[in-house]
Length: 199
Image (cartoon, rainbow, N blue to C red; front, side, top):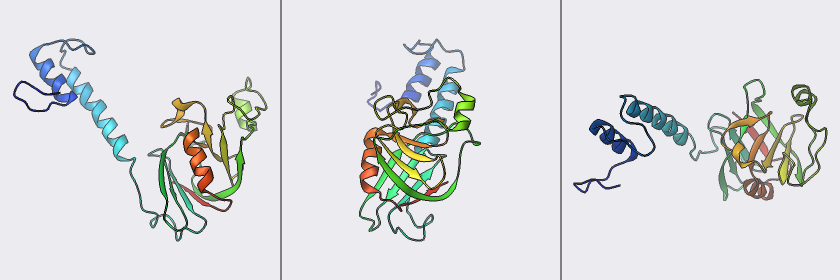
């Protein structure tokens, strides 16, 4: 947006200017003295979240890239993939576990790849959610989406999801979720034995 004198104005400056002038904006009430402060708080949160989603080098996390390497950063809700020969690097947004109690960190590996996975909730999931079905076959209602990478940890997966609202949020019962188009790409790139690190 360009101001009267031709200089560019961002949303925060626009809100601050209109608030100072006592002008009502379409999405905000008239100036109460708190509008700009709230906008700054939101901008600061968004800035921190966006800055943590960035490309990384593999060296601080792995000794080598044999069989390829996957790094999942739970805090930034991002999955990084490096091919064995380092010719391919991918960065995907993810969903992560709802709570720290459901979050597992450490080293594991891909032990199975399933195209069109079926899903069974774990005993602890059924205890928390007794209304859930005990089995869902492959298809659009499956919580694991179109593809799943099974990890050496029991019940833990990197998988797709048909519920795109979950990506970028704390929304899983322990697994790492990706958009279906992203898990499809990752599925094609990985192999049984691909090393995985969750931090």
